[in-house]
Image (cartoon, rainbow, N blue to C red; front, top):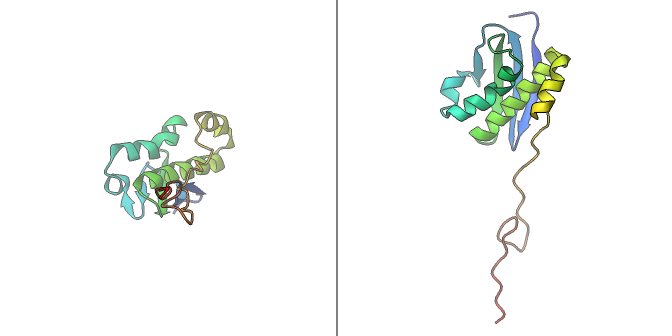
Length: 130
């Protein structure tokens, strides 16, 4: 194990990603599996790698992630947020670059709850005069 590791938690929708960055060769492990086996869609892999590419730290860190909840898209966003926050722990100078790209801000959009007396969050039951 390496002497330095940087931890952060990322969230998106209902997904929560606990992220550890350790100096290494650039391996990304998600829930015990390599990124290629965890995400089948190429866009999800691209989303996860965005903060590393932006800060030019691809290949500098081994990344270990435990992610729970949500779907694969939400999990990819949570991992991206977690990596971003861990990079800030590693080097606070990266804040301006990551902030400009909008990676630090948590995407707070979540599913709206269903209300009583309605079909769903906003859908009403059909009204009939008679």
